Amino acid sequence: VIAYTDQSKYAGEINSDNWYEVLTRGGVIYGHSEPDVDPCGYRTLMVWQLAELYYEEPGLYGKLDENCPEENVRPKSVELIALLQSGDMDYAFEYRSVAVQHGLEFIELPDEINLSMVANADFYTQAEVELSGSEPGETITQTGKPIVYGVTIPKDAPSPELALEFVKFLLGSEGQAIMEQQGQPPIVPPMTDYKAALPEALQALVGE
Image (cartoon, rainbow, N blue to C red):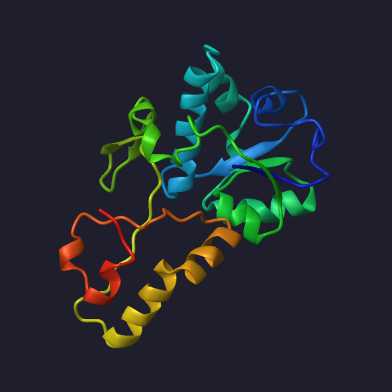
């Protein structure tokens, strides 16, 4: 999402259709996290690439990149929150959960570009970002894909019974409601490729 406050320039005007036009206006300051160290950073660049395709605006990626100088990039996305709250930055590309949990205003981007929908996985693959590798001169290419999180219980968990109870709670209706309230919409029902390998107590809570 694009997070902002009521003090951000054009806060009363920006929406999911005109956001890229608003961001590239003179005097508007926006930022993102560092792609080489924070996944939210390279995912922001993917969103810009997909936006160019989705809105059929040639050159949009370059324009967004050009108008976001290096001083607007921070190592972690959460470090941008203070800049928004202080008024030093107008807009920041964040995970929805971060915006919700910090009480920020935010614009939800179309599903075709926000990397949230498994159904749009093929479209997302059109985005690619080259990152620095662990060795000097090494590069790694990340390809766009849906952002999906998983949970597991380690085989050597010190308290496996408690871990099982926690996962049951998390996957149940109450846990899913909490996730939704905190800006982390769950996949309903939770999915697995190995349902038969799960503890019996969890099998009824997931699909395949």
